[in-house]
Amino acid sequence: MMPVVTMQGCNVIDNQTVWKGVRNQVREALGSWFNDDGRTTLFDDIAPMDWITTWSPGVLRAHLERLIPGSGRIKATFPTSQIALPDEAPRLGFVVIGRTTHKGWRELQLRTALWTSA
Image (tube, rainbow, N blue to C red):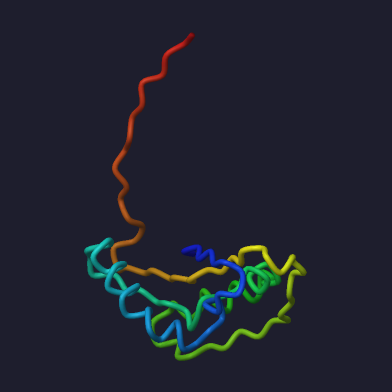
């Protein structure tokens, strides 16, 4: 998940028009970052944190099943809620991204650090 933080009154989260305007750029950026033959699935919008916190394990599984090739458009239903925040509080949402490859898990470079005792 890629976090999106907005100022109060900024109508970006859960806004289909905004998402349609940026999803291709997000997809291109992810494609250049991964630079492999994997498949990237971007979910339909910028999901509010309020929604994601209500996802049960079954809902999360339904979302993950969307990543299975040939699964079609599996629809997950879940109760939505709204967290009561002050009007001036920033809002948090997430771009939900699924990533699959035929090669299995990506290899990450092993980073070593030198630890010293004081």
